[in-house]
Image 1 (spheres, one colour):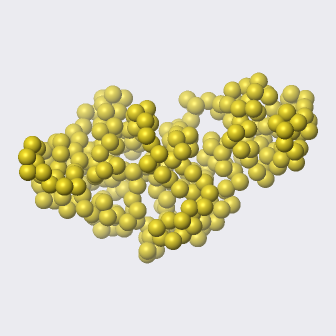
Image 2 (cartoon, rainbow, N blue to C red):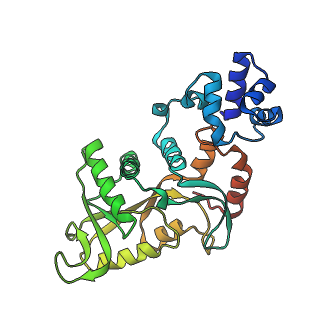
Image 3 (tube, rainbow, N blue to C red):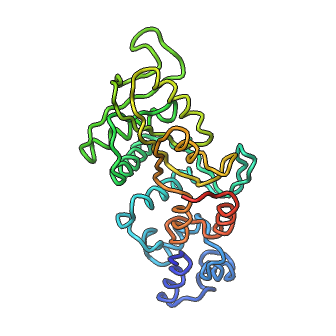
Length: 287
């Protein structure tokens, strides 16, 4: 297990310092250092720059990897954590469950972040070999996703796809209607991009709008994270969408990928693993 604690111990021994030496430098107890090295806990993020400075290395070297050596799933999980989108703690969900983690996509706020997010969606589309004539983004979060993904598909992979999205209200002037962008033709294949699926309400509304425009086929849907979690039934919201609409739903990562990333030291949160695993065991569904 490539936990950061084992890396700290390796660096400390190589430097010839004791746990007490490191603890004194950080102004903490040596017991805290001991817990890091045994994997009983992880250092708070505020200590990381000081640890890197103590050992005379970069933060990447502290974690034992180079960013360009990570696959796109690992880079995406790190991106979510660095953007404040992936958080750990206690969060009450709409279902009433207390979750040990939360994905808040509302924390993507900059041009750099939406560009990077579109890049991850594009990478996932290419990696999975998904094919479509149109990228469709349901209002409102799906709108910037469709645009950013379309830009990155073209700029990175030379895939020039059409894009379209809906609006909440009907306009009777300009382009009119509820569908904006590309004009659908009978037989077009649509790939829907969205941040997440909770109840499936957004997709159902989008499908009703799409079906009133042309005879198109929604083949796939792509979301950022699959919680692999039961809904009101024994199925997840994603499984219910696949069952009800015959759509294949894909995700850039799943909660299982996030757990593995913590185990491998890609992101902090080693002390959260027991609660994550327990929650997954209690409410999880199989892939």
